[in-house]
Image 1 (tube, one colour):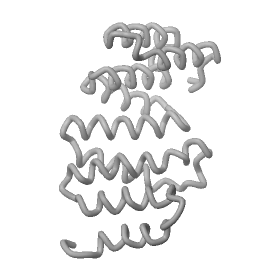
Image 2 (image 1 turned 30 degrees about the vertical axis):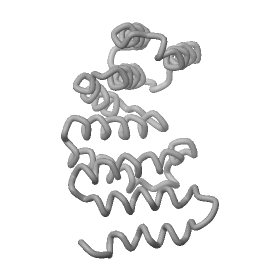
Image 3 (image 1 turned 45 degrees about the horizontal axis):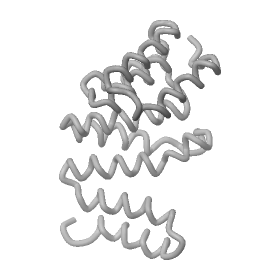
Amino acid sequence: MTTTAPPDWEQRVAALWAAIEDHQPGDFRAQMTRLADELPTGHPLALFEVASANDSTGEPDAAAPLYRRALRAGLTGYRRRRAVIQLASTLRNLGRADESVALLTAERELDPASLDEATAGLGDAVDAFLALALADSGREREAAALALNALSRHLPRYNRSLACYAEALCDGPGR
């Protein structure tokens, strides 16, 4: 099964997302489901978009299995990484922080050279959500270090210093 969708479909999905605030949660989910139904049953993009719609409108229990199905169905590239991040975040919110840590740790270990630029560009998002999951798992120092290290890459100054301090957090008191 192809993992692409017609450009018109992609545009309509993007337009619906752009207008999410104009919809009641149930209406938004219904409209996304109608768009998803235009693709073949089990299409990874359709599964991902419906999962995201559920997640974004307060239905994490419905979202998690759809993210998993989208990933098993062959979701690729940028959306695959988004699905991993979003699934991990959902799992954390459902009280399954250790599972979230495992997913994001595996994602973080992917070779950046094997990813396209947009997908690799979500690396700091992987780190941010991993930091949240680590904090919920009782690994606060590691979480702070990861978040500070990610932040250090975006500062106009003090990048090296902050990165070194972040590394030291894992080696300092309490470790």
